[in-house]
Image (spheres, rainbow, N blue to C red):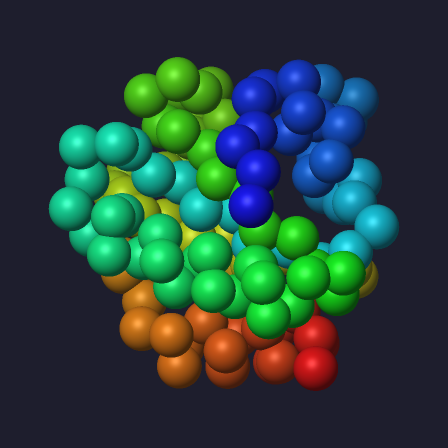
Length: 117
């Protein structure tokens, strides 16, 4: 898992300054976790994401964005509550999920939205 700044987000996920139309910059599907250090539900999701990062290493990426440090990125996706999870397939539009998802929900989205087996 990797923490993203605005600059690394533009390089690895979406360069929103280059255009408004969604164009994924990455080479593998990814999950982006919008979180804050003080958020209890975010802390509950963190071990699940770490486990999934190991399980799917090389097949997909998992990124984290601290909403306190990167408010512009949070605003870009309309993040109003955390955790907010963004599932980004290689092709197609990203999908948002709100709240602390159980592991089964992550697994289902990884298979169906990200098409990672």
